[in-house]
Image (cartoon, rainbow, N blue to C red; front, side, top):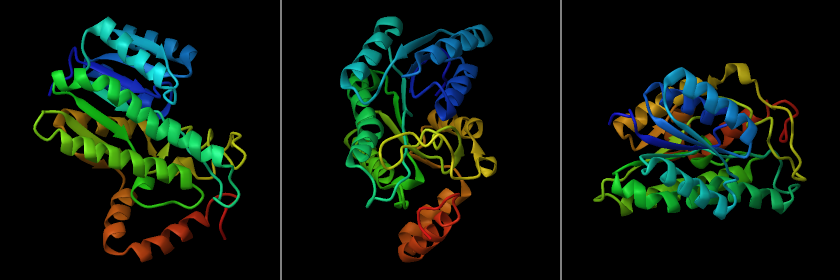
Length: 271
């Protein structure tokens, strides 16, 4: 698959993996549709990419937790470019609170953004993607393979995303639709800074050492390569691949290793 002049939609494109993916797809000559709640930042990214790479970029304000805004994102894409070739469901939020302490509205918000945002965008883009034998990509997480303490809502939303995409893939084994699930592992980004705590407020800090994590740029390079090669699943980091293997072979051991890992967080929730 070549990406030149293809139309790529990326949600959550104003920072982190989404922004890095936009830059990487732009290098391949693709036209881009960038969705985010941070519309002012999208405008700056649009100008930078168009001037650097001689492509066309459409910036659309979009809160993926709202079905009508997802529908508008897809409709504006079709109106502008007349086609959709790749949908990158990247928009996502996380949390940091023990279940016994957390307000249930936090879990609902994570499901609305991480799971329903993926469902809404995919639903409205699917007719065009089927027409072009395009790609649906979900930026999931290792938390979608094995539960993480203090992230019940995040793990639940990513497990749900994984199940949705797997079912969609099987439904479309004979249609030519490509479905890829990506589990980046811990990636340096602002997702932990914007993490929701027990009352739903924003953490504005990170509980982990971001300097030891894979960069968003490294992750985006592998995602773009995966789209080109039409990969089924990408589990990107060594820690992530180990987690997936242990989840199948020694889940109880993985429970203990995961517990031990999270006791080493800054201001840990478990001791």
